[in-house]
Image (cartoon, rainbow, N blue to C red; front, side, top):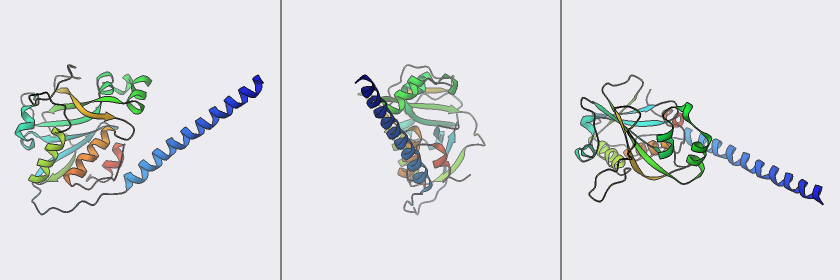
Length: 222
């Protein structure tokens, strides 16, 4: 009887592991296919004389705007380092941001919680003094810049008087800040999907769906 029970347990574990493997493979295959598929937004007749940038740390994408292309209402809510010329915006899991300043600091607990449990999110705002050559440059018109600003602003949690809620975490250095964000991070809503959503809203051709930075960068000008 005991041996029979053990065999049943082993068989059940095998089936669960097989199911998990199938789900993982399905996730990555779906990500690959949908990353390669390109959106085809309606072409705009306005003049694209504004710039935005996309940058990656190898895993995570950020949106970067020149200071002059940030709406005054959004700018008023941000802490900007004097002398800054560009501001980067990233959305992601709050614990991941605050507890993982470098990839070597990543723990299994933080990664598991970010991917599989409902978790709070944060906006990471970084000020830059100079443009980096590695940034991907995208040309936008006035209406697209306005849509992008609205998308970014709507991602912040706000207080009753409309100001952004800071997390209390001082940031990784003297030129970056963290704010509470809307939404929950998951396998299906990653930091890169947030960026991809911004590109879709703005009318920029991008991947249909990509949880990874490479799928989005594939469609952007080099």
